[in-house]
Amino acid sequence: MRKSLMICSLFVLFFQAASAQKISILETVLYHGEEISSEKAGNWIAVFDDGKTTEFIPVITTLKDAYDPVVDDEGAKTGIEVTINDERKPQFLLRGIVPACSAPCPSTGILEKEIKAGAPINIDLGKRHFELYVESPSKADSNYIPNNARLILADNRRKQVLFEVGECVFCYWSVKWVGDIDGDSLPDLLLYVGDHYNVARQKLFLSSFAENGKFVKEVAEIITSGC
Image 1 (spheres, helix red, strand yellow):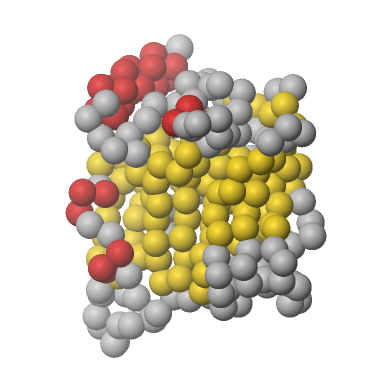
Image 2 (cartoon, one colour):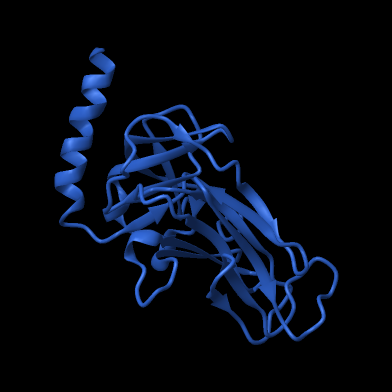
């Protein structure tokens, strides 16, 4: 009971703070120093998902100087490691919006799933069914995303382009997570996309911000590079 009251109290505080913040996402990983700023330390919502249930838990992030094996000489620490006050590994961290579900919620089971041309990903949420798929006039080369590709979210009545590229240099796309953050029984998605193998773009799409008859709208992005 005490733990539940504490979590509820934290959600009230996070709701008050979120109203003054833009929506942001973050991972508990090592970043290159220039990819992250000190304002990323502090209050976040951690999204935990084990494939059966999803939990949205208030956490506090800490940023720590760390050795970056890509660019650092021995003894240097130009990287920034993001950690939280929870031993579990979250799917991602969320700031600027309070999830509608404060208790454990049903999971869609869609986690870290590669997006491939010719292999639609089925998304079932409540009584609604959606497909996420790649559309391109170019032929797919092996497992990479083809040139002139568009990532489509569709139901049986309409479709929406979520991301598109011209030239795609050894591109890899994936669904990091699908769930319902805003409680409207429509899919919210965290996608890993890009147009080059060395640049990663993680984009959060929320349905409650959708406009003009679309399913979702992009509300946050993290851009990182390999070297």
